[in-house]
Image 1 (cartoon, rainbow, N blue to C red):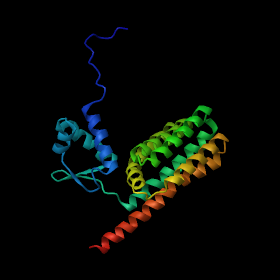
Image 2 (image 1 turned 180 degrees about the vertical axis):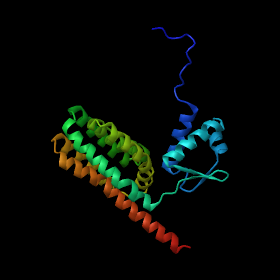
Image 3 (image 1 turned 60 degrees about the vertical axis):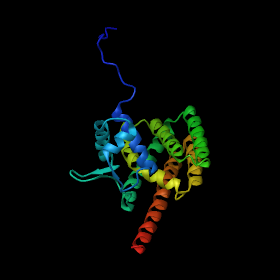
Image 4 (image 1 turned 30 degrees about the vertical axis):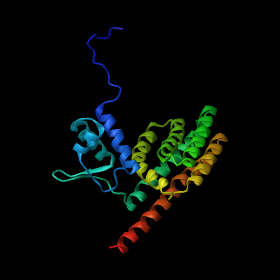
Length: 232
């Protein structure tokens, strides 16, 4: 092929992307706590990069809702707010239920095997308290169903909402606020429904799989807000 000899070499991963992924993970894991002030110079030093890719990464994280940047003031990790739970989970649950319904007509035997294996790994990660691994495996489970649904509009909307729900899922699964055993059982029920082409059951259980933790997380946040007011 007539590829120019002076074509630029592609980096495996840019400094900005590396900074973005690591800072996002620190926020999700709670290393950078909700409301915490963050300094680009300290992040740059910790990551071994210049301040420019860190600043670019923070701008993306602001668009994703992970940080709040105020010109001339501090950049802080976005607080976890109870009202956000009710804004994010219901539309995500509805979209995920639609994806499950569509996937029931298109899912393959290979998809079913992949879902069962992912759910087994998910249960194992929870048992070992490897919560970030469990979070990734849970996302892989839902991604497999989303790919089987084969609807790019659903994929776009769900991916955006997933960005925001990630932190809720990680923080509260780690603190045993949500019921991990129920998640494993619901995953198994979704797989069975997909395998039997039961669209209604697949959609119903999928919706339940999202709305149950929503209620558990919202209840915990309400108790924490009450405890905080009592301590003032």
